[in-house]
Length: 121
Image 1: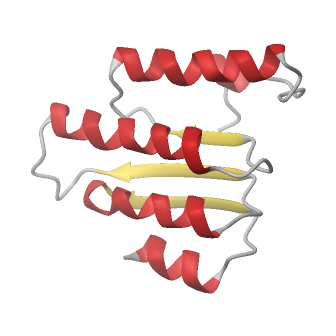
Image 2: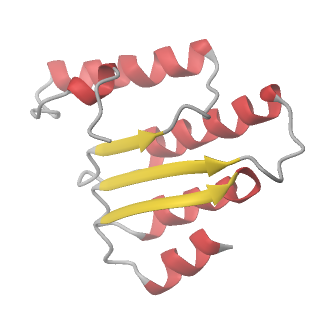
């Protein structure tokens, strides 16, 4: 719900850092589709009230990567997440492969240390 409210009322947002519950992650797509000026997205997951298992978490987190690959604007250049995220190996490889392709093509011309595990938290 919180993502839908942000997407509807803040379409010009450039940076978003949010702590949310796992069950709300489906709303991230709304942010990606409606906030075309978004450059940085940080999502921290609170699993306190989560009944899901690791496989369910992996499916949802993989969907977020797919949203970023398929729907993020050209302005978008930074995605950060915490240690509670679960990705399938194949989906994470695909995501990084696309990032590497964009880097090789010159689409990504910034310091990419954060793609390889070095972050600024």
